[in-house]
Length: 254
Image (cartoon, rainbow, N blue to C red):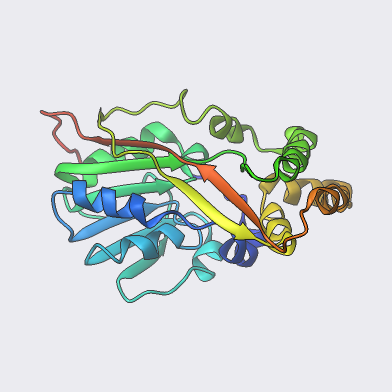
């Protein structure tokens, strides 16, 4: 079952998480054998789900967190359900695309992959992506302050978070891989927007609950010192994207 580390910040998660690039969803839709049904697993606030709905007739979006589902963005072609990653509730062979956006590290990965193989139609596509720390090329001091916060919070991240740091290199991917090009998220954020994003980190939530203190206070001072004269800073996150199809000869079970 997937872990729920975001129920207490579900509204902020929906408001402050950066947006995935449209180029990613266009590329995935172009690879799918049909554009009938996509399954967005670990959907959180529905960011990827709604983007997929621009390309697919229907998106089945699931998350283990009822609070995340309650805060998710409504869309007429997105059906939200509270469900673990290994139990989608979908018919066998019914899905043309399965996506996992910044959530695979919370799953029982083997059980999820078994479910993905079950629901994918022939030549169906699975895509899993993650991103680590932000980059601020024009103002490196801003990224330095965020990196320092990450270092200070190292012991407060759930253990599964290490897979983000390794960009999923140590997680299995039993599918026939292929490339869809490079993609990254980009934003121009004010300082309050950046602080809102940092507040959604699960490590921050755990630290506040355990210590009764807010580690963002010291980080805010460092960011104020590093912030340029302009109101916004260009922020980017390179995406690590794993895309594949079921190996030939695999017979879905269930």
